[in-house]
Amino acid sequence: MTRLVLWDIDLTLIDARGFGPRWYRRALAAVTGRALQQMPDTAGRTELAITTDVLENHGVAADEATIAAMFTALTSAVAETRDELAQRGSALPGAAQALKALSLEPGFVQTLVTGNLAEVAFHKLESFDLHHHVDFEIGGFGAGSVHRHDLIADSVAKAADRAGAAIVPDSVVVVGDTPHDVAGALRFGAVAVGVATGSSTEAELRAAGAHAVLPDLSDTGSVLAALS
Image 1 (cartoon, one colour):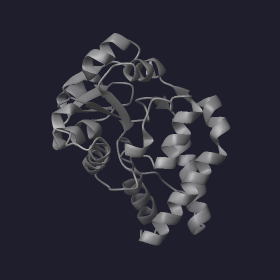
Image 2 (spheres, one colour):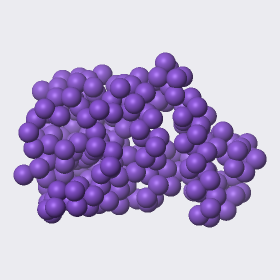
Image 3 (spheres, helix red, strand yellow):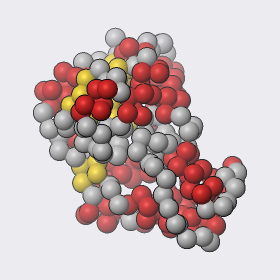
């Protein structure tokens, strides 16, 4: 049976803290001419949810055309700062080793369920040479819904279509650093693996219902055991 592993990106695989508000500042100014006054909570949320909040908090209607323009501007902002991201951000300890090790295990497929836009997800992982073992074509990305569990369902549907066979929920593993990741996994019926490399503690991830919790990804053997 295929084991489908859905990785979160921010503070699970990489640390790009500080860049998000900058990208939104540039995008909001480019699309609306307005200065960014405040950022909503972003942890574990999708780009559609965050962008909607940013627009509405700055008195701009979050209609489909404006959101699409924001997504285009955000992608451009990330692309234009990739060199700086590679210099000032980082891959989290053990991330590269975990992705490579899992790629060598039979029966595993790795992709993403992330609040990021698909293009932004690629830019972020490629900046730290983490993109090689992830199948971007079957990922669930943040333009699709304000609800994280919808992104999981979207990714699983793509993977099932690719495989030509149904994928049962308990063969799906969601790996992330927030209770939102855990909640999305549980709602879908997937296995939830929490990684305490973000703002949530191991205790908080366990309380959210994670089936397994890791302090980080540095112990590859423990990562593989949690995902198996």
